[in-house]
Amino acid sequence: MRHMKFLGAALCLLLAGQASALAGTVTVMISGGFSPAYNALIAAYEKSSGNTLVTVRGPSMGADPTAIPARLARGEAADVVIMARAGLDKLVADGSVTEPTDLGVGRIAMAVKAGAARPDIGTVEAFKQALLDAKSIAYPDAASGFYLRDVLFKKLGIEKEMAAKSHMIQATPVGLNIARGEYELGFQNYAELKPIAGIDIVGLIPEAVQLSIPYTATLVAKAPNPAGGRDLIRFLASPAAYDAIRASGLKPAGEKN
Image: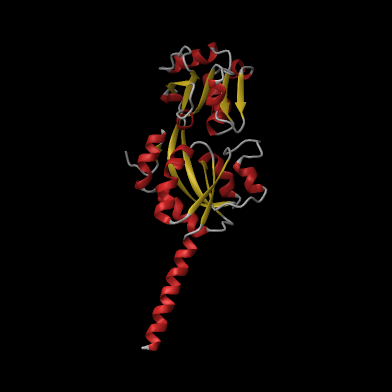
Protein backbone atom coordinates (compact mmCIF):
# COMPACT_ATOMS: atom_id res chain seq x y z
CA MET A 1 0.00 0.00 0.00
CA ARG A 2 2.83 2.37 0.93
CA HIS A 3 4.49 1.51 -2.39
CA MET A 4 1.30 2.33 -4.31
CA LYS A 5 0.96 5.64 -2.48
CA PHE A 6 4.55 6.49 -3.42
CA LEU A 7 3.91 5.68 -7.08
CA GLY A 8 0.73 7.78 -7.04
CA ALA A 9 2.54 10.73 -5.53
CA ALA A 10 5.36 10.37 -8.05
CA LEU A 11 2.86 10.31 -10.92
CA CYS A 12 1.18 13.48 -9.62
CA LEU A 13 4.55 15.21 -9.39
CA LEU A 14 5.42 14.11 -12.94
CA LEU A 15 2.14 15.44 -14.34
CA ALA A 16 2.51 18.66 -12.41
CA GLY A 17 6.03 19.01 -13.75
CA GLN A 18 4.81 18.53 -17.30
CA ALA A 19 2.06 21.13 -16.81
CA SER A 20 4.48 23.64 -15.31
CA ALA A 21 6.87 23.05 -18.20
CA LEU A 22 4.10 24.01 -20.60
CA ALA A 23 2.60 26.85 -18.56
CA GLY A 24 4.73 29.92 -18.19
CA THR A 25 5.92 32.80 -20.32
CA VAL A 26 6.00 32.55 -24.11
CA THR A 27 7.90 35.35 -25.84
CA VAL A 28 6.67 36.16 -29.35
CA MET A 29 8.41 38.30 -31.97
CA ILE A 30 5.81 39.38 -34.52
CA SER A 31 5.61 41.64 -37.56
CA GLY A 32 2.61 43.73 -38.58
CA GLY A 33 0.79 41.43 -40.99
CA PHE A 34 -0.52 38.85 -38.52
CA SER A 35 -0.64 41.27 -35.56
CA PRO A 36 -4.36 42.18 -35.73
CA ALA A 37 -5.38 38.50 -35.61
CA TYR A 38 -2.79 37.73 -32.93
CA ASN A 39 -3.92 40.68 -30.79
CA ALA A 40 -7.52 39.44 -30.94
CA LEU A 41 -6.45 35.94 -29.84
CA ILE A 42 -4.11 36.77 -26.94
CA ALA A 43 -6.74 36.71 -24.18
CA ALA A 44 -8.36 33.47 -25.38
CA TYR A 45 -5.00 31.72 -25.64
CA GLU A 46 -3.77 32.87 -22.22
CA LYS A 47 -7.04 31.79 -20.59
CA SER A 48 -7.07 28.35 -22.21
CA SER A 49 -3.37 27.56 -21.81
CA GLY A 50 -2.29 29.22 -18.59
CA ASN A 51 0.65 30.72 -20.48
CA THR A 52 1.41 34.43 -20.50
CA LEU A 53 2.44 35.98 -23.81
CA VAL A 54 5.19 38.57 -23.95
CA THR A 55 5.12 40.32 -27.33
CA VAL A 56 8.00 42.02 -29.14
CA ARG A 57 7.07 43.82 -32.36
CA GLY A 58 9.11 44.70 -35.43
CA PRO A 59 9.16 44.45 -39.22
CA SER A 60 9.82 41.10 -40.87
CA MET A 61 12.71 42.42 -42.96
CA GLY A 62 14.58 45.60 -43.81
CA ALA A 63 17.43 47.56 -42.27
CA ASP A 64 15.67 48.94 -39.19
CA PRO A 65 17.28 47.72 -35.92
CA THR A 66 13.85 46.68 -34.64
CA ALA A 67 13.44 44.21 -37.53
CA ILE A 68 12.99 40.65 -36.31
CA PRO A 69 16.06 39.22 -38.12
CA ALA A 70 18.18 41.98 -36.55
CA ARG A 71 16.81 41.20 -33.10
CA LEU A 72 17.60 37.50 -33.47
CA ALA A 73 21.07 38.28 -34.81
CA ARG A 74 21.75 40.34 -31.66
CA GLY A 75 20.78 37.34 -29.55
CA GLU A 76 17.45 38.64 -28.22
CA ALA A 77 15.56 35.74 -26.66
CA ALA A 78 12.22 34.55 -28.02
CA ASP A 79 10.21 31.35 -28.28
CA VAL A 80 8.12 32.05 -31.39
CA VAL A 81 8.57 34.22 -34.46
CA ILE A 82 5.55 35.20 -36.58
CA MET A 83 6.23 37.09 -39.81
CA ALA A 84 5.93 37.05 -43.58
CA ARG A 85 7.13 33.73 -44.97
CA ALA A 86 9.43 35.49 -47.46
CA GLY A 87 11.45 36.95 -44.61
CA LEU A 88 11.69 33.62 -42.80
CA ASP A 89 13.44 31.67 -45.55
CA LYS A 90 16.91 32.91 -44.60
CA LEU A 91 16.25 32.37 -40.89
CA VAL A 92 15.14 28.80 -41.55
CA ALA A 93 18.15 28.19 -43.78
CA ASP A 94 20.66 29.42 -41.19
CA GLY A 95 19.02 27.46 -38.38
CA SER A 96 17.80 30.45 -36.35
CA VAL A 97 14.21 29.17 -36.46
CA THR A 98 12.58 25.84 -37.15
CA GLU A 99 9.23 24.06 -37.61
CA PRO A 100 7.49 26.66 -39.84
CA THR A 101 3.68 26.63 -39.80
CA ASP A 102 1.64 28.91 -42.06
CA LEU A 103 -1.14 30.74 -40.21
CA GLY A 104 -2.77 33.16 -42.65
CA VAL A 105 -2.44 34.57 -46.15
CA GLY A 106 -2.53 38.30 -46.90
CA ARG A 107 -3.08 40.37 -50.05
CA ILE A 108 -1.83 43.82 -51.05
CA ALA A 109 -4.27 46.73 -50.96
CA MET A 110 -4.06 50.42 -51.88
CA ALA A 111 -5.16 53.29 -49.63
CA VAL A 112 -5.58 57.06 -49.87
CA LYS A 113 -6.14 59.74 -47.24
CA ALA A 114 -9.75 59.72 -46.02
CA GLY A 115 -11.92 61.79 -48.34
CA ALA A 116 -9.36 61.94 -51.16
CA ALA A 117 -10.21 60.88 -54.70
CA ARG A 118 -10.10 57.12 -55.20
CA PRO A 119 -8.26 56.13 -58.38
CA ASP A 120 -9.65 53.37 -60.56
CA ILE A 121 -7.61 50.20 -60.01
CA GLY A 122 -10.17 47.75 -61.38
CA THR A 123 -7.94 46.60 -64.24
CA VAL A 124 -4.20 46.28 -64.67
CA GLU A 125 -4.14 49.17 -67.16
CA ALA A 126 -6.17 51.42 -64.87
CA PHE A 127 -3.93 50.48 -61.94
CA LYS A 128 -0.82 51.25 -63.99
CA GLN A 129 -2.23 54.65 -64.94
CA ALA A 130 -3.06 55.41 -61.29
CA LEU A 131 0.56 54.73 -60.39
CA LEU A 132 1.82 56.96 -63.17
CA ASP A 133 -0.58 59.77 -62.22
CA ALA A 134 0.26 59.72 -58.51
CA LYS A 135 2.59 62.40 -57.17
CA SER A 136 3.95 60.14 -54.41
CA ILE A 137 3.71 56.51 -53.32
CA ALA A 138 4.59 54.76 -50.07
CA TYR A 139 5.10 51.08 -49.23
CA PRO A 140 6.67 49.23 -46.27
CA ASP A 141 10.06 47.65 -45.77
CA ALA A 142 8.27 44.31 -45.83
CA ALA A 143 7.24 41.63 -48.29
CA SER A 144 4.60 43.81 -50.00
CA GLY A 145 6.98 46.76 -50.37
CA PHE A 146 9.86 44.75 -51.76
CA TYR A 147 7.46 43.12 -54.21
CA LEU A 148 6.26 46.49 -55.52
CA ARG A 149 9.75 47.93 -55.81
CA ASP A 150 11.63 44.93 -57.14
CA VAL A 151 8.98 43.02 -59.11
CA LEU A 152 5.71 44.83 -59.82
CA PHE A 153 7.03 48.10 -61.24
CA LYS A 154 9.35 46.16 -63.54
CA LYS A 155 6.49 43.89 -64.59
CA LEU A 156 4.39 46.94 -65.51
CA GLY A 157 7.30 48.56 -67.34
CA ILE A 158 7.26 51.71 -65.16
CA GLU A 159 10.30 51.13 -62.96
CA LYS A 160 12.04 54.39 -63.99
CA GLU A 161 8.90 56.50 -63.63
CA MET A 162 8.24 55.17 -60.13
CA ALA A 163 11.76 55.45 -58.74
CA ALA A 164 11.73 59.18 -58.00
CA LYS A 165 8.32 59.26 -56.29
CA SER A 166 8.34 55.98 -54.36
CA HIS A 167 9.20 55.84 -50.67
CA MET A 168 9.91 52.77 -48.54
CA ILE A 169 8.70 53.30 -44.95
CA GLN A 170 10.69 51.68 -42.16
CA ALA A 171 9.11 50.09 -39.08
CA THR A 172 5.86 52.13 -39.32
CA PRO A 173 2.46 51.19 -40.76
CA VAL A 174 2.18 52.93 -44.13
CA GLY A 175 -1.43 53.87 -43.39
CA LEU A 176 -0.24 56.36 -40.76
CA ASN A 177 1.79 58.25 -43.37
CA ILE A 178 -1.19 58.28 -45.73
CA ALA A 179 -3.55 59.50 -42.98
CA ARG A 180 -1.18 62.41 -42.30
CA GLY A 181 -1.19 63.33 -45.99
CA GLU A 182 2.53 62.73 -46.43
CA TYR A 183 2.06 60.54 -49.52
CA GLU A 184 -0.75 60.23 -52.05
CA LEU A 185 -1.01 56.45 -52.43
CA GLY A 186 -0.10 53.79 -49.88
CA PHE A 187 0.34 50.07 -50.37
CA GLN A 188 0.48 47.36 -47.74
CA ASN A 189 -1.08 44.08 -46.73
CA TYR A 190 -4.83 44.72 -46.40
CA ALA A 191 -4.83 43.44 -42.80
CA GLU A 192 -2.29 46.11 -41.84
CA LEU A 193 -4.19 48.95 -43.52
CA LYS A 194 -7.59 47.91 -42.15
CA PRO A 195 -7.13 49.15 -38.53
CA ILE A 196 -5.72 52.58 -39.49
CA ALA A 197 -7.99 55.57 -38.96
CA GLY A 198 -7.94 58.46 -41.39
CA ILE A 199 -7.55 56.46 -44.60
CA ASP A 200 -9.83 55.00 -47.24
CA ILE A 201 -8.88 51.59 -48.61
CA VAL A 202 -9.46 51.75 -52.35
CA GLY A 203 -9.25 47.98 -52.70
CA LEU A 204 -6.96 45.10 -53.49
CA ILE A 205 -4.61 45.57 -56.41
CA PRO A 206 -5.62 43.60 -59.56
CA GLU A 207 -5.39 39.83 -59.33
CA ALA A 208 -3.07 39.54 -62.32
CA VAL A 209 -0.38 41.51 -60.44
CA GLN A 210 -1.38 40.54 -56.90
CA LEU A 211 0.91 38.86 -54.37
CA SER A 212 -0.21 36.27 -51.83
CA ILE A 213 1.74 36.80 -48.60
CA PRO A 214 1.79 33.83 -46.21
CA TYR A 215 2.33 34.71 -42.56
CA THR A 216 4.13 31.95 -40.76
CA ALA A 217 4.95 30.97 -37.19
CA THR A 218 8.22 29.26 -36.32
CA LEU A 219 9.85 28.01 -33.17
CA VAL A 220 13.09 29.80 -32.34
CA ALA A 221 15.97 27.31 -32.32
CA LYS A 222 17.16 28.47 -28.88
CA ALA A 223 13.67 28.98 -27.45
CA PRO A 224 13.67 29.21 -23.62
CA ASN A 225 10.18 27.61 -23.58
CA PRO A 226 9.87 25.36 -26.65
CA ALA A 227 6.89 23.46 -25.23
CA GLY A 228 4.98 26.68 -24.71
CA GLY A 229 6.03 27.92 -28.13
CA ARG A 230 4.74 24.79 -29.86
CA ASP A 231 1.50 25.01 -27.91
CA LEU A 232 0.93 28.61 -29.07
CA ILE A 233 1.65 27.73 -32.71
CA ARG A 234 -0.80 24.83 -32.59
CA PHE A 235 -3.47 27.16 -31.23
CA LEU A 236 -2.88 29.88 -33.83
CA ALA A 237 -3.00 27.33 -36.67
CA SER A 238 -6.15 25.63 -35.38
CA PRO A 239 -9.76 26.27 -36.44
CA ALA A 240 -10.25 28.03 -33.09
CA ALA A 241 -8.27 30.95 -34.54
CA TYR A 242 -9.96 31.11 -37.96
CA ASP A 243 -12.65 33.68 -37.11
CA ALA A 244 -10.09 36.15 -35.77
CA ILE A 245 -7.81 35.57 -38.75
CA ARG A 246 -10.65 36.17 -41.21
CA ALA A 247 -11.84 39.26 -39.31
CA SER A 248 -8.35 40.73 -39.54
CA GLY A 249 -8.42 40.58 -43.35
CA LEU A 250 -6.34 37.43 -43.83
CA LYS A 251 -7.39 34.02 -45.07
CA PRO A 252 -6.65 31.17 -42.62
CA ALA A 253 -3.85 29.10 -44.14
CA GLY A 254 -5.46 25.83 -43.10
CA GLU A 255 -8.82 26.60 -44.63
CA LYS A 256 -9.52 24.41 -47.67
CA ASN A 257 -11.67 26.86 -49.66
